[in-house]
Length: 123
Image: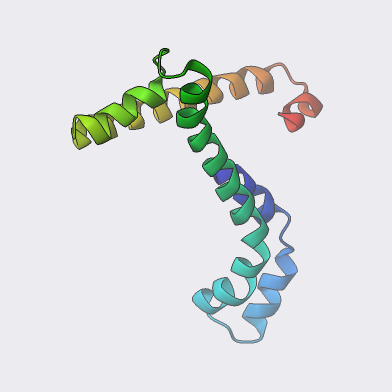
């Protein structure tokens, strides 16, 4: 979710923020009337990406495996809905997100250390 929002905010023209401040708007009004409307495409894109990935993690294994193959999505559903162990399910979910974040950060560090900026921009 962060990456599409970051891209939409990076494309935001800084002169619009300066013009808003010159016209007397405070920071919260500038955010509501300038920044938020211009970043809504990034918010929508990020929401769709997150929704698609989360739904795919649970539904696809049940469709493809027919319930015979056990994936992490199935384990999380079991923890939340069948076992009713919400704290452990939340901990496992957070751990999975942290593992993916660390993996992506290491990959980006490796790509950026090679000095190929054009390739890093594509990632």
